[in-house]
Length: 229
Ligand code: ATP
Image (cartoon, rainbow, N blue to C red; front, side, top):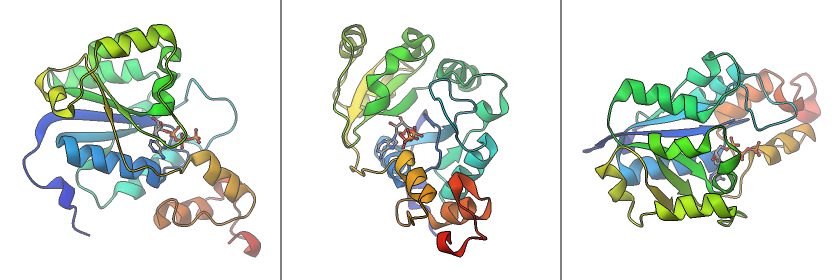
C-alpha cells in the first residue's frame, strides 16, 4: 500500500494523539489521518496509555493495545506509535508525556490531539493547567459529543482559541483549535461489547486488529468457540 499522506512538504511539528486504544478503531485512525494530512505535521505519534488514570474496569494488557496499534498503522509512514507510556511505570499522565517529548524535540510546535468528549473533561486531567504551556490543543469533533466545558475550563480554552489550524504552526504551544473530522460513531466500548456477545464488529476496525484480538482471545473472544469465530 502506498502511504501517500507521508509525502510532500511537512511542517516541523509533533502531534501527540493519546488514548487507551482498547482496541484501536477507524474512528481513531481516520481522525489521525485527517489531522496528519491537513496540518502536515512531520511527526504524528499515537500514544497508547499504560495504566489509564481515568478508567475503572478491565482493559487489554498495555502490550496488546500497543501491538494492535502497531498493526493498524504498519503501512502508513506518516503515523507512528510512541511506546513511552506503556514502558513507563506508574499511572499514565499526559502532562508527563508532553514534558518528556518536549525535552526531546525542542521548541517546535507540539499539538495534543483529542476528541471532543475527552476535551470536555480536560479539567479532570492531572495538572491540566500545565498542558497549554507544553502544547497546543487540537480538539477533534466526535459524534454525540458537543462542546460542553465546565466554566473554568471553558474560559481557559476560549482565551487561547484560534480559528485556523495553520496558526498553530507559528508557536510551540498555548493555542486551542477545534477541527472537524469525518464523523464516525465508533467507540472501543461498543466494539468490546459486540465481541463479548459473540458478534462480529468487522468494518469498524482493521481486519489485522480483529484477527489479533481473536488470536489472543481478548475481550471475551475465544477462537476455539466456532460460534464466536
Ligand atoms: P472507550 O469507548 O473505551 O472509552 P474510545 O473509543 O473513546 O474508547 P479512546 O482510546 O478512549 O477511545 O480515545 C482516545 C482518543 O480518541 C480520545 O481523545 C477520543 O476522544 C478520541 N476518539 C475516539 N473515538 C473517536 C471517534 N470516533 N472520532 C473522533 N475521536 C475519537
